[in-house]
Every structure is written in C-alpha cells, then in structure tokens.
Length: 255
Image (spheres, rainbow, N blue to C red):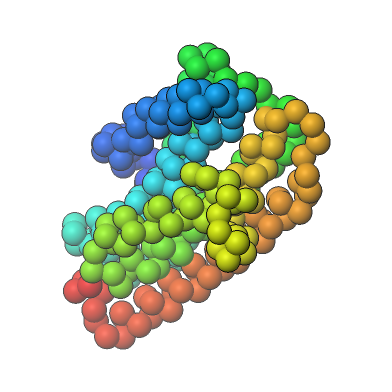
C-alpha cells in the first residue's frame, strides 16, 4: 500500500506541473451541453439528466486510458522507465497508484456535467437512490483504474501507446452504452456489452437519478466489482510477465 500511495502522490505532482493533462475538464461541459441540447430540441427533455452522464464517462475513460498510456510513454521518453523497473519497489504497484490518480479528475468531470445539467440546462438530475449512486460510482472508479493498469501493461510493448489509446476509445463508448443505450445496439452486439463494466455502471448511474425502483442494483454492482477485480488481476499479471520478458531480451528501452 505504501508503494501504491507513493505512485498516487507522484502522479498528482505531475498534474501540478502539467495542467494540460487536465484538458478533458474543459471539454466535458461542452459535450454535456451538446448532448443535452440534442435531447431538448428533439422533444425529449426528460432524457437531459441521462445524457448528462455521457461526458463524465468519456472524460473518465480519457483520463484512465490516455494517462495510463502516457505514464509508460513519458517514462520511456525521459529515460526513467528503466530506473523504475529496476527499483526495489513493485513496478505494478507504482503504476496502479499512478493510474488511480488519473481517474480522480473524473470526479471533477462529473461535478462539472452535473452542475451544467442542473443549473444551466435545468435538467432533472437529482439523485433519488443514493446507495446505488455511491456504490456504482465508487466501483466504477475502481474498475476504471484496473482497466488503465491492464492497458499500461500492453503499452510497455507498444511502439505508439497514443495510437492504441485512440483506437480503443469509441468502440468502448458504444459497447458500454455511453453514447447510445445498449438496448438500441444490434442484437448480436448486445451480449458483448455485458463483458464491459461500463454498460453495468451506466445503467446503474442513470437509474439512480430516475424516479422509481432500480432494477437489479445488487447484480449490477456485483458485476462491476467482478469485472474490475478480474481486470486488476489480469493487468497485474500481464505487466509482471511483460517486464520479465523485456528484462530477459533487453528490449525495455527499445520498444
């Protein structure tokens, strides 16, 4: 835990000296306004609250995926990756602490989109089921950090982590039901969405601001926790095995 905390503090210091890493906090309200206006001028003002969560997920995914990729890429460019790998501290724990810090600004992105929808666009975004909201929100942050750790393992061997990050954005937006509800996807594609924790998270968070009972809240949170835990274990295992491989071949600084 001390190593994870040290990695977390290190990444937070990067935000202090590299404020450009927080760029999604500027675009999140803009996306929120665009999506809300589309719903309002389509005669579906009742959906303003639901679509207001879309920029939050987009920003959270950006922070986790791009920051996770840039962690490895930046260390490689600066020539510090070899030092971090050879240090006595567990490298996977350091990376997990750093990617954990990358999802923290997603909380600020949620606050921005909520304030915009509530006080500027006058949308109905009141939280009606606080237990479901807090539980699913917390588990979503955990699962997103675990996903970033898994991606970071792949980025060790990738020649261009940025290119990989770009290609992994919109497919998950679709499968996760962020841009459109999963029920509107083609029938053959819907089962694939169940393997993406974002689909369970989006359903629960949207249901938490809608009047009426939340359908199967426990099952949804259990699925987020299971998928997040599986991804965390997979990411930790993959990262350790990849590091063993590149140490043996001497390719860590060449990739």
